[in-house]
Image 1 (cartoon, rainbow, N blue to C red):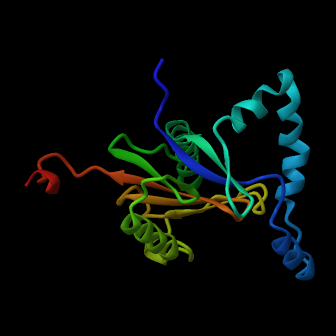
Image 2 (spheres, rainbow, N blue to C red):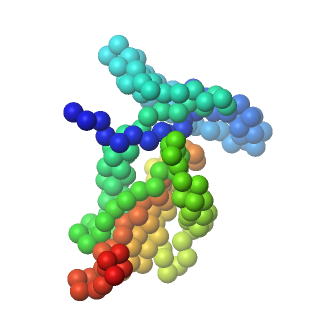
Length: 195
């Protein structure tokens, strides 16, 4: 069976950067991501003769700064974030996403050998735009995460599905994904891609 397209994701091997840990300790902040990882995920790595650990490490490359680049199954991540986005929309407004939306995602922490510098610059601009809270007209709704240290989401869009919707996901304050739930134009309107 052919393997799905793969991109490289950058992950820190083992621990938070030491300088970051010192800054957090000085500022009185505690980064619970390491604690959560060690308590819930690390034990899973040893089961079945370390099968999960071996699968995750397969094809990984240690970078000069000590970070590790892992192969990532992007379609699988897309499936996860599509499902998460559907749930967030439902939680925010009490209704499922209508069928006239197309979903896509930008994984900000992933990189690959053939990255387009212009695309990365556009991505950085997009992240900057969505970094603040949505203005009132684009405040589609809110969801309350159980633990904002682990996960937060901001939802941009006009209420009642009158526009496309953008969701900014952030895990542990480090891993970011932007989900675009794009409203298809009504039938009969010109498609700008085919003009």
